[in-house]
Length: 124
Length: 124
Image: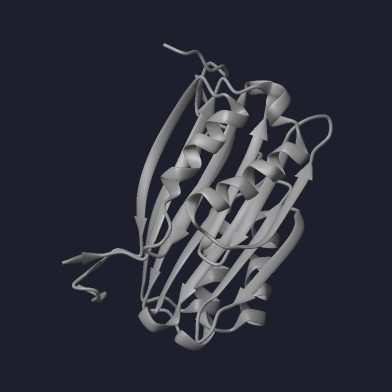
């Protein structure tokens, strides 16, 4: 039996709305909305705006984290939605992300974190 | 020519020192030391201790983020070291992490984020 501790979606977003990628307040709201959509619990959210452009935002969760780093000049955002616990679903963040950033393309890498056989880890 | 914007190491650490995994102050220091080792610039660091055990820590950087989520009961930590810019090297964090958490096993997934051909992204 396989068991894992965390669900980590690596999202590569291209062709996003450059205005949204540079909107620090909008990014903060998107992160908070993602946390709620995933069924997770927010500990804190922190954003930072870079000059001349680009932003970073991280939501620290009771169930891991959600992070975004944006490059308006490339229409690109790197997003990580990492949640643990059976009550959370990181895929539920996708609709919130699509609505705000309007990416033309999303590449998803779906990683299971803390993967164990029989619920225990043994060094081979 | 391939160009990428970020270097993201996904680290699966097993067989760690359970005391270190539950040491919130020690985790905060490890994160700050990792930022320095990578050549990155710290914006803020936030940690949280869970009851009865486990901790989360996130360092927000001028060059993306470093995050850790620990499970002392499994000897496990999920670590992400994500830095952008040619002046940073996420691999430099490994020695700091090994010294503090003393993992028996480290699995590394090395992802390039924001990967482009010819320095531009084109929808196919």
